[in-house]
Amino acid sequence: MVTPSILPPLNPLLRLSVVKQTTGKSRTTIYRDIQKRLMTRPVKIGGDRSAWPQSEINAINQARISGKSDEEIKKLVIELEAARLVERRGA
Image (cartoon, rainbow, N blue to C red; front, side, top):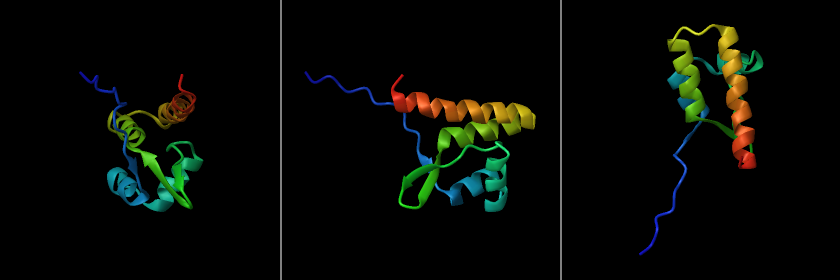
């Protein structure tokens, strides 16, 4: 009997066009939000291409829908990006 491997849950990477559609924001506004720490930075996926983990976009959208303040969203963005480091280290 073969034991099925336990795979981590899928977390698709979204390209900018999908992030724009999902957030309702323009490219300029998304990158302005990154500078203000109101949006996570994209992940490099090869060459000059980048994308965002879907879970991060969902979390930020949910925070907006819930009426979180910009300060609360900044804290969320910091937590989301810190979680990337933890996942990378395997902790």
